[in-house]
Length: 136
Image 1 (cartoon, rainbow, N blue to C red):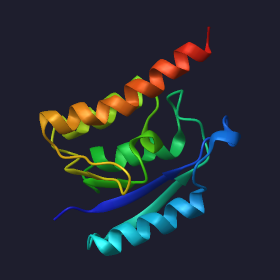
Image 2 (image 1 turned 120 degrees about the horizontal axis):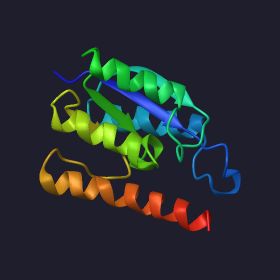
Image 3 (image 1 turned 30 degrees about the horizontal axis):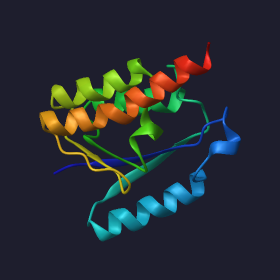
Image 4 (image 1 turned 90 degrees about the vertical axis):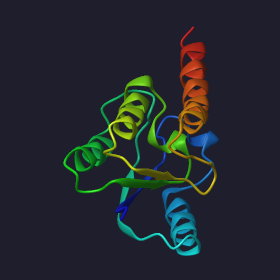
């Protein structure tokens, strides 16, 4: 059985581009979990940019997965989890090693297949590309 934890993040560097507040994400994930009959063991929230690695709550989430305490993540969109290659790579590595069995998003499809991992990498790549463009 998959033990899910919900992760909600709101960026601190692009306040004018925020789509959903943390509270709105929590409510959306509760509705999504109820509709799909998924049990969320805990909600983790963070108000940090994901463009740079080192977010404390995200790192805690990764350590829970590495220790085998959880094996599923529910988040509003993949860009809530990672917007840099290091954090994105951690998620994909945990999927590849089987420690992370399931990723669920109400706004994005993911299945643990080569095609699913490719689809997961598209928004991550777009975010990384946009970040480097903004640094010019």
